[in-house]
Amino acid sequence: MLSYQHAYHAGNAADLHKHALLATAMDYLTRKDKPLTYIETHAGRGLYQLDGPEAVRTGEAQAGILRAQTEGWLAPDHPLLSALAETRARHGASAYPGSPLIAGHFLRPGDRAFLAELHPAEHAALTRIAGFATIRHEDGLQMAQAICPPTPRRGLLLIDPSFEIKTDYAELPRQIAHLTRKWNVGIIALWYPVLTDPRHLPMTETLRSAHPGALISEIRFPPARPGHSMIGSGMFVSNPPWGLTDEAARIEKIFQTQT
Ligand code: SAM
Image (cartoon, rainbow, N blue to C red; front, side, top):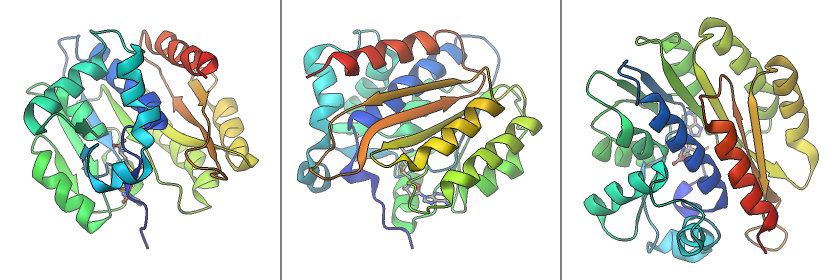
């Protein structure tokens, strides 16, 4: 039973953290004249409207992309702003790109993309806007395990689960260990929530000791609603590309100093 819908959370502080790092990595990877593969296990619908009823109901984008734009958290030439500008030019002034459209903004002819989304309505919406990719209506980690190592071999895999299943926290390090063994040059990124209870900590400790060269970036922010258990956002990235650690540190600092 899939109940999570990203439309309520699009553009929030966690999206800003995840999408700024994704755009930075894709920008760097696509500067080299060599093809790559982009894979995403939990793609969502790919396109959101920040003036739509779901986003307006939670108002979460106010603490994320909207605040970033007002307060200049992203330089004018930041890769996330270039993906945002393309999305708004095509889909209207309140549009916000999900991770598939952010990655798609950087892909070139010759690059390949594979996206998985299990929710029927989200999958149907994704197929309408992500014509650049092969889109699967299946379990994303099963798809990733079947594709990896991909051709082209350079590339990035984003795992962005909704963590509705408690066993995700134990299962993800096993899945990532298997993927990195098969695809040692791949960049594997995992987003996770930082919670008031320590549920995510054994997962990050396992990832940290199994992948000593990986980037682990965490930011903290006030809960979206009183009593909400998510108080931050985390990104694990194996084989972090050049510049990503600096960008992560820059974003972490913004959230350390924000009021
Ligand atoms: N990555 C998206 C972005 O940043 O724009 C947001 C994705 S959202 C956090 C997680 C998505 O995963 C939801 O749309 C949900 O329907 C989907 N999902 C849940 N379980 C899945 C599974 N086993 N395989 C593929 N998709 C799944």
